[in-house]
Figure 1: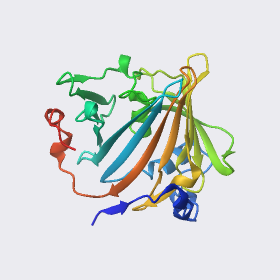
Figure 2 (figure 1 turned 90 degrees about the vertical axis):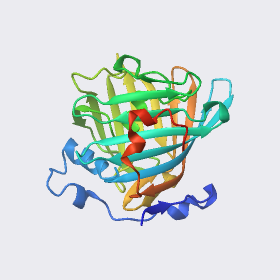
Figure 3 (figure 1 turned 45 degrees about the vertical axis):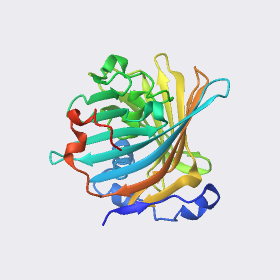
Figure 4 (figure 1 turned 135 degrees about the vertical axis):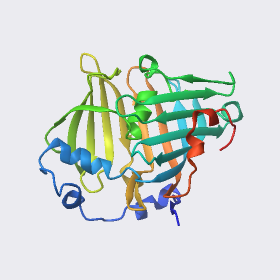
Length: 272
């Protein structure tokens, strides 16, 4: 049976914050606990090993306060070769119904494809336009790739531990791989020591200019099927003065999802 997490109203979320033992003894069993790799290994343990399905809502605000709300389902699956595929399919509002974004993990550089129901065609997202906005949100294609744990990491450095919202965190910086075309010079991750969830991410453009800050609402941390998630996160674009709140309404782990759903030819089929 799949494991399912149905979030409760915001005022009851504190009850979902289970007091779990630190994961360091598990995640770092064969790795130097003081290394950067120990932190990234711990982060990886929150990636579903088989399949997952999330129902999400994006609330994008422009610089004058105008808000657009879109809703989507995000399907994830690890294939027999050990590599993952992620499909995001929008279903609200009507003008975006059927729009889809597919990521196919590869050993070197991932493939990304975008389907627009308005244009009725699928196009490849190249590394040179990966900084573009994902359906009008403050997440770029590259940001979403990183959010799903599919970014091809380069050099990793560990910094001094710190705290975010009074929660102890490990801090690592990840520099893009040599062959990767990235909008960022470096991305800094603040990883909750209790759950191994990234609760703050700072993305720096060339010249070490801070461009985007992603923060997770600590009260929204919850466990489903042995995996910890942040149910609510906020992405702020400091340059454009815009922001997008991502709310995970429902999560299912290890359910039956057909390989067919992740085929490129299926993108143009308008199904949830």
